[in-house]
Structure formats: structure tokens, C-alpha cells
Length: 116
Image: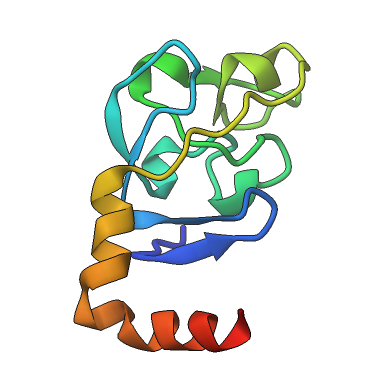
């Protein structure tokens, strides 16, 4: 399995990885998590073949065998029932502030300011 500290999900237009603090994407939850593979619906970055690619706390992921004989995959209630994905939660203030002020992100900020 691949582990990313920081990556980008173009489908949901947001940063992902275990270094990205986040809030569970379930609309009725405020649990603090990170956007690493431990919390992703589908068990793989971007959701793999069976998930939506959103991020959930343990209470909002369930293990479900999606194919006969397959290993159970962690999925959200929406994917488990074949419904459309929830709306993703916005980035945390902590993450936005880090990207706006950290020297680590200085090159990224310069690049994106020049594109505007």
C-alpha cells in the first residue's frame, strides 16, 4: 500500500495525505482526522475502484466485501448503499494557515500567485 504525506486529488480539488489535517466528510460529524489512506473511502488514494475517495473517521467507514471472495474494503455509507457521495468538508483553518505561512509552501504560493 502507498503512503503519502501530501498529495493532491484533482477530482475533489483538495490536498490529501497523512500530513493533511481534516474533518470527517460525513455531514453530521466533526471528528478530527487526516487525509491518509487509513481514512479514505475505498481504501486507496482517490477511492480506488470501490470508493468515493472522501475521508471519514472510523465511525463512518464500514468494511464491506464488494465482490464475492474479495477482501473487505472500507467504504462510507453512501458507497456501501450505491448512493452519490457526500459533499466534501472544506480544508481546516489549521491547514489553510499552514499553506499560507509555512516556508515549505513558499514555492507553491509563488507559482500560484504568478498564475492568477
